[in-house]
Length: 134
Image 1 (tube, rainbow, N blue to C red):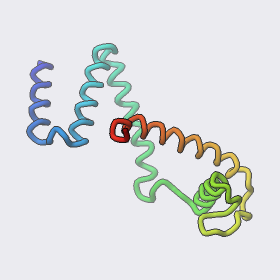
Image 2: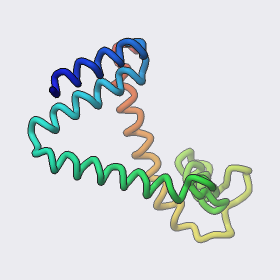
Image 3: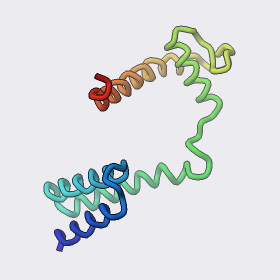
């Protein structure tokens, strides 16, 4: 019965989504991940893992649904000052004003973290698109 259900799902996807769309590729990846999980893990653990994932998504979506992720002017100032430090311009905010109303330690700590995150993003981008670059 699970093979029949798989055939129905695959035929439904092929009928309603072109195969070259990102959504179709994502759904196929999720289906293959599901097959791997069910093969190597007991069904109750897969269901528990799915429930935890749904709970985690709900815990993120619920508080941010109406008002966004909660960026405040302080966080924008900290991030822009950290970017200014990375670029070697010193303690300046996004609007060119000096950063002096808040303590300077957080942008100092945030700057290397942003630098590492940018490097990781660059490595991931290059590893995914290396064929197109060369």
